[in-house]
Amino acid sequence: MKILTIEQGSPEWEFARLGIPTASRFDSLLTPKTLKPSTSADAYMAELLAEYLLGQALDWGSSGFMERGTEMEAEARKWYEFTYDVEVETVGFVTRDDGLVGGSPDGLVGADGVLEIKCPGALKHVQYMLGTHPDHRGQVQGYMKLTDRSWCDILSYHPDLPPVVFRTERDEKYLSALDAVLEPFIKRLEAAKARFADQRVPRPWHPGEGAE
Picture 1 (cartoon, one colour):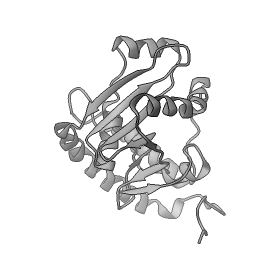
Picture 2 (cartoon, helix red, strand yellow):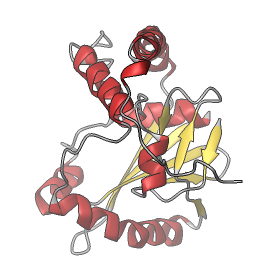
Picture 3 (cartoon, rainbow, N blue to C red):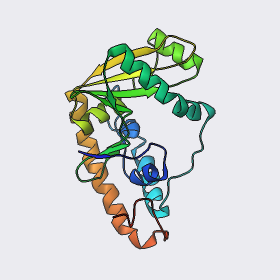
């Protein structure tokens, strides 16, 4: 595991995750409920290859709630630390040793835990309160795989409503099924990168390049 101490959302963070599969998109590789290969895998590969060729992330835009969530994340983390009497280690981006897959957990808790913070609008937060929210299985299991940890707490935080915390344990059955689709996906993606390497758009500078 490699931990990059960079700020999430920064140009350095965008560059670090450029053109590689990330935990937040593992549902595009493996269907969470059935553990069967996702029909979205080919489209996801095309997206990652496009990023690699362009040398920049594809611009999908950002919603007001996404920006709001980024601003509130520090407040949510402090609430979690105070409530559970723990210290949360913030990380920017985590990759495997080979750098071919990664993820951006919102924090590491002790020696065994991961923290994922959601700051949704009121409607989605109430779904967390009712237990009818998405389970984020691919994302949180991906974080546990990358960090070799045994549990992940999902914190849904809204400033005017009670915070909600759900703990998810490591699921070896899911992770085995993920390996079965992830490794072939990476091989196909790297082969496609090699095939079209001479078509990359030249960029004069990338974040982190040339640093000593």
